[in-house]
Image 1: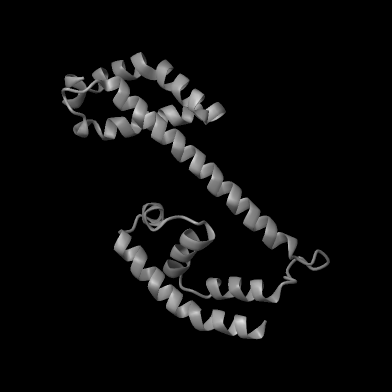
Image 2: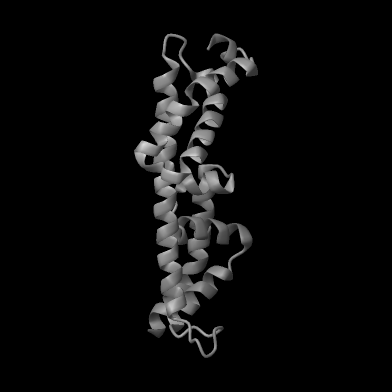
Length: 173
């Protein structure tokens, strides 16, 4: 472990070889299923990047398995997020007039989407991540590689731009 912390990649390779089967079994049993291999790979990458945070008096195995468990939780969160997005997309596509797929039956929904699309790229990205994908501010910041404060200020600015458009939609109902 000391050699791996010191930057010896071969030593880290030995740790990977020693703990891969256990990490895979852990991910699988925690619910990663067929994605257990991906979870384990991501866990080893994260562990390698965080070796500098490893306490010398600690045991590597529980530290690694905690990372595997967290990655499995991330996988579950991602699945839930994707499922929610699929439901939202399904709800949107249910409102499409199939005789003319470009026409939305629900006018207020069309106006909402049009309002979001009218935003500049940066504002549209934060609104999409935060509200359409239902990501937290921290997740939005990580996804867009922005500071959390930048996400907050862009959201505030974007919502200020959207507010008059959305009030118009509400009045038209």
